[in-house]
Image 1: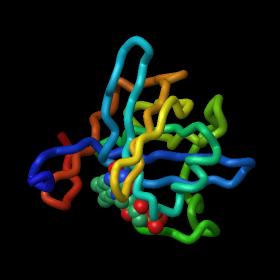
Image 2 (image 1 turned 45 degrees about the vertical axis):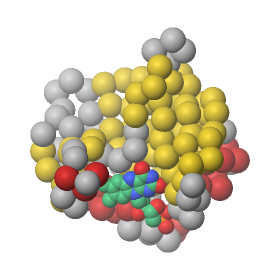
Image 3 (image 1 turned 180 degrees about the vertical axis):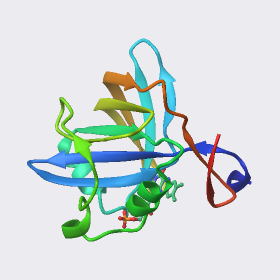
Image 4 (image 1 turned 120 degrees about the vertical axis):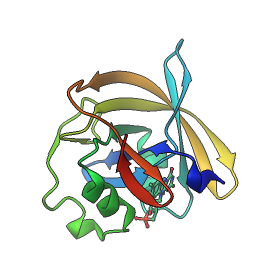
Length: 148
Ligand SMILES: Cc1cc2nc3c(=O)[nH]c(=O)nc-3n(C[C@H](O)[C@H](O)[C@H](O)COP(=O)(O)O)c2cc1C
């Protein structure tokens, strides 16, 4: 059912003392305005899971329609040594890197974490948000990436 329902595609990034990971996610959801909260559901087996849990913060780069290769890269389980090769990023305020060319960026502190079966639902308090209004988002549906 959910495969046929469109989701925006983002890359969640984490940084713990310079150790950085990114993972492609479709689970980003807006939860609250006051305070500003978003949710992301992350698999307990994901290679960035422990880093995320321990670091206490994350960033989300909401991908643009021409960034499907980046989405594939961060969904592939790339070994840490090749993780950031050729990926243009800039520094966020909280630590996790922000991916260049995205439609928008959120920087969050983990506000709560809820057990969700084989995933954990992390609720992030949005401390910074920015948008590039010239870009259009990337959508994932029926196992393929499409423009809006
Ligand atoms: C479009 C798309 C959306 C995804 N959404 C999520 C998600 O919301 N949460 C998650 O834990 N994994 C999600 N994944 C899977 C991860 O990107 C990744 O493939 C998985 O964590 C295995 O890689 P790893 O071993 O490097 O963690 C998604 C994959 C794709 C292609």
